[in-house]
Image (cartoon, rainbow, N blue to C red; front, side, top):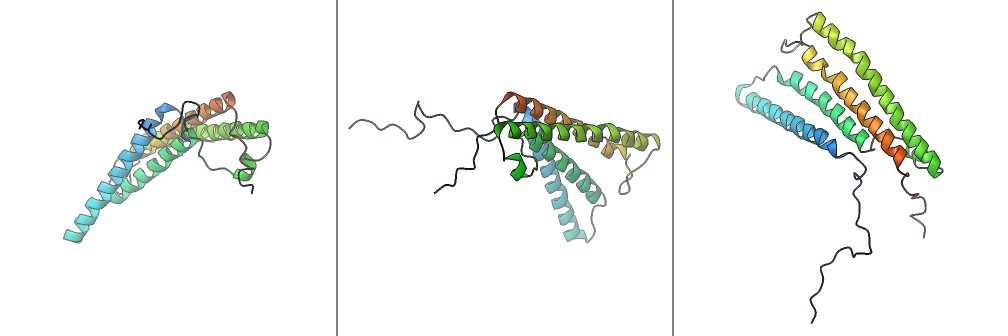
Length: 185
């Protein structure tokens, strides 16, 4: 009896591709930041629950730090979504029409995201400067407010850079195949 070959793709069948194959390899930054921020949120919340349970009081700083970390998490996740081309869009318009139209809309969307977050990055620098110049402190624990606000222009610039990268990648490749006929009987 001849040995059986393991199941899997044959030489003539192309290997399946992951949906993130067209995303940049440098997404590890966003992925690791997401893991670190989520772990910090979980640890802070768990520590606060334990303290409340055993002492009937809580850490005063946990709410302020948790809100900051959730904002950072949303921005980092937004950056990863843009880089992976999984940002929000109206599928009816984005997936309909000719190949050229879909490619044009994909590039237009990436350009608008880059413009929006570039503008946010530039304008929020003024907020950071004002926080620093006027010595604003956070309401909960009294640390300098710019420690929190400095992350908005930085991560917004990252999102804008990711959107520009997406714009360039969309210009180099054909849009996804038309899926409108997939459900025919």
